[in-house]
Length: 190
Image (cartoon, rainbow, N blue to C red; front, top):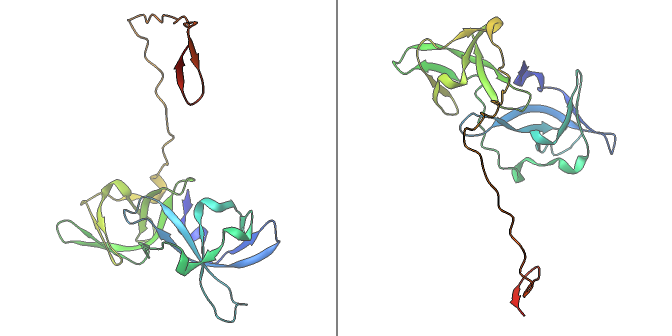
């Protein structure tokens, strides 16, 4: 189980340049809260303290102590990145009936950066399928959708086996006509 907090406060190191690009200070999710998209960095050594951003898909390795990227070229100024500021951590959760449920403390993600659920009250997970809507400070959920963090399992993607067909398919081979010359961009008759 991967969590958003696994990224926070880790340095981002470029393998090609051997350079510390900055520390991860935030994660930006898509507007529908389906996937994590960007890591927001800051560099203490930068006098201007301008934020930087990197696409999560550019992360080569999420290590125990650092996040590794292939090249510093994938780090861009945060003002150039399409960040929407969507991060559910610290959002209040309410049911559709108006009952306060808790405050989001972390985000459970699959290894493909897809959001699987929201952690709240230390050990409870609200599955993403029970999230009705979200904004910068509120998450609205179906009532009673929470599960214990110990019981959450990330399902494996299973591809169904092809079903045998009762119908037999017949394929007829077409014979080329000798009076037609086929070129890559045109068809001409001789």
